[in-house]
Image 1 (cartoon, rainbow, N blue to C red):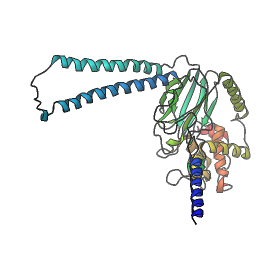
Image 2: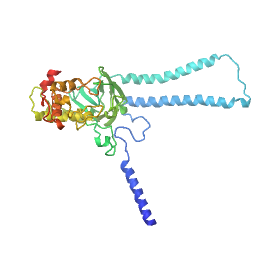
Image 3: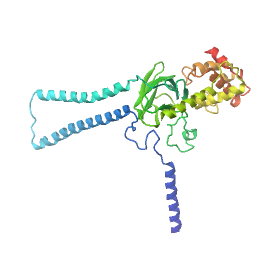
Length: 386
């Protein structure tokens, strides 16, 4: 009996150890580390300056704290009533007044000078080698390469964490909620200017390892910059509460060598040429459905779900929707302008072909097939409605 119990207990221990090992969380590559307390390891000069300022100011504050409380506790102990201490009677001391005015002033100046130097450097976006516009959407990032090598490249960057991990069906990966399908790719040791704006609400583009955090505000254009000194992937997140899926819009920047960056630019331009949509072409229903399924997966599935059932109380279902099954004009207007006062944002940033395709897809998907009016929407229909 003891032998059996000992064997069973041993098996339980082994299984517990194995389960713990299977559930162990590792450091995120380019992101936060397990039990991290300090700032991210800096990979830009600005981030290194921020880290130095952090420790310098923390050290000054610690010295002041220890000095002030040491004097206070010593005074309480050495001049207590039980030792016969008698309070002094005086009106003022010019020396003390001058000291506690001049010394804090010098401390503040000593802290402000290096901090101001770093803040000024953070805002100097001149002479950039590459300019990228980062547009915040609910809930993803759009990148447009405006100047420099790669000019004209444009893509959306969506959360790539599998739904099974989001809903607890599978163990969470090391880069849970910090992985995307299309990272921002930049060359190492080049000054990258990032212009930020937003399509709907306020977002914030933040990559801690770069020392960068810039708000993206609808109707405004702001900018920041970084020069990564190390090759690798570096992760950040939207740092402004922007809606129910705020946690689902991570940022991944892939820093590569100049040679690899040139290859990536060539590959992207080749893909864009291959996928170029002809807005003047009359598309077949099958072509639109195929293209629309891709657009739906990139832009709509997070809210309206793969089943088209939506999220009750938040996102209306598309399966069986009166708008989807009704005249095409109403659905085109909804996609172009959104629905004020609801979670439905405008998707006017999509091309005429993409909007026509995704509308056609929804009119043929799920139980909608063969039921509604205007089953096929052409790019010309969208163009005339803009």
